[in-house]
Length: 255
Image 1 (cartoon, rainbow, N blue to C red):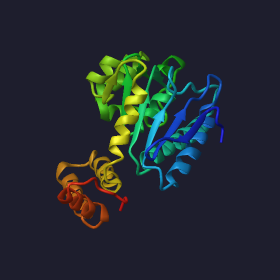
Image 2 (image 1 turned 135 degrees about the vertical axis):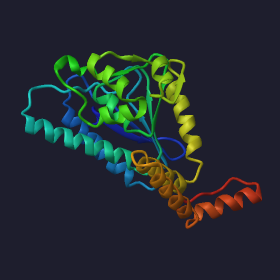
Image 3 (image 1 turned 90 degrees about the vertical axis):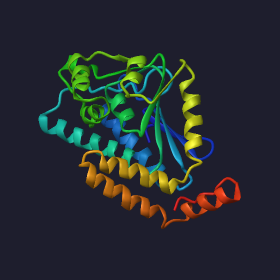
């Protein structure tokens, strides 16, 4: 695996740290292939309870598109990138993207594929590639519009300007805002807490939120009903209820 572009390592309490660094000269295709390999590897490890998606301390992924492509080559790259982001969304583990510094272009698209983003006060977000005649290509335009609305997404894509952390937090792009240098530590604490919850319920809860987001309310509520019922078919629900009665910490198994 090209470690210079992407790396993963075990953290504490079942958390895996997936670092997407890229570099100023690395190609988007190489980075996406490296990310795909690490996602597949982490998805196959039952001891991984959660994923902390990081880009380092100064910039979230340094990779940008370079060189000319035919429309067919561009479509192929975009399709592959979108499939990688979908695979990241479907690991079945809670995934938090933590941003310290600039998060733009492809890095921004990767962060948007996490369950949610936490960031430091020095972070910035945007799609500056409009200056090169390009738009997001890994699903970023669609994920961002679902978070902050169509008009704000169009403003960011059209202008290429970077959004500061305070504004990103105000409009709901990032969930939590921390002092500069503290975001990674706080994100790991938050993810550690989340990973004490039922993996079975987290997986089902994430799936029903994702599936119900773009359909009518009545059908989405039916999905929630069925997903709620499914919780009662597993060990985790029985263990959780018994632990509550016993006044002890539950020992969830993820099923």
